[in-house]
Length: 421
Ligand code: GDP
Ligand code: IMO
Ligand code: MG
Image (spheres, rainbow, N blue to C red):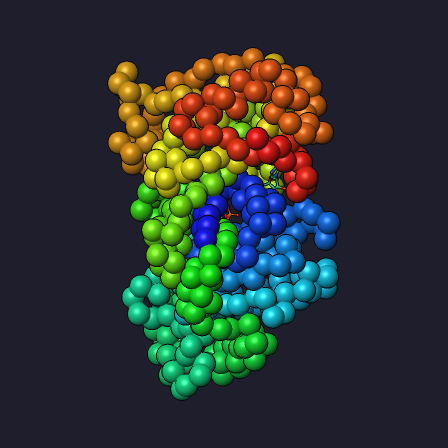
């Protein structure tokens, strides 16, 4: 039995979707364990180009069973749309996609409150995806959540009534429009009717799979530094993102997670507010234009920065990373020089990531090393040896800083554009 967690080592969007898609060929189960449809995972393969928010990115491998764990929060309309989209593309999810009845539902008031809280914070806003993620997790841990299990009794209607009484008062106080019980009830009953065939307790599926020695691929959403505890709080997301979350979010005992793949972008990006020590702010610079990306979920422009090895090193330590999947090395081609942050200083003294809070991280001085770039287009390279020497040196520098081998190198967005070492 092999249980492999795939986690992002930065602030999300490292290329986890692509990594899970190509690693899934050797998996029996592919699973999501945290977050919700704030995630946007891009997959490009023989079926087409997809931006997936809830279904595990390993669904494209024909023999996988896909699980959405109880640790995931679900906007049912998004899940329905995604299932239809995948079935239409010929991926065929019926009979091999199972959603935990323990997963919590994103309700209309969660999305409204997310927006109202953000607006109220003004300049101090987190820059959330406004998908209701913070409010739904807040309800989960304050015993106010609604789960799929509630639909099998009168619990759903009773709990919804109470929640609407509470939430409508807050919404009205903040200037929003109150929600009507009947319309929310009917809308969600409709979702339940459509999703019922996919809702199934995962406990015995997971336990039987572990006992039978099957291979599990666990797909994190968000990145290490959006983790509620270890990220740049309050500029984080509302779920635990480090591999231990997979234990609670799927019911997999921690001792079984023996492989942790750290998906690491060859530079850094961040969406939303919060510190980004290596940020490149000159929007006219060549490197800003090269690194530029559009967010898969919200369509916002991602902030960009040089590779930050203190961040990657800390992620490796926190998650017990066993190998790195380096992505987007191809994007660096053509740069004369590449800057890499090798550590931080405050008042001339070295500090680690964990020594400062988010506001402190915003002020650290980055110590940079400048490496020579390469001019060759590497998008068709099939082996490490085919890469220009300076690209090889860049990879080796990451390995030695993180203390983790780089086992895969992405040289393009498509599944095949991956070098295995
Ligand atoms: P995720 O949220 O971690 O799955 O990452 P996203 O899909 O949000 O963002 C990663 C972006 O990088 C997507 O547009 C991918 O298609 C793209 N990508 C992933 N790996 C590579 C790579 O090695 N090279 C290039 N050029 N693009 C890549
Ligand atoms: P994937 O899985 C990048 C960010 C938001 C915001 C903060 C809180 O595609 O890597 P939330 O809506 O979660 O309450 O927003 O977290 N964020 C992400 N950034 N990639 C993601 O997911 C993200 N999911 C949330 O931009 O700063
Ligand atoms: Mg993404």
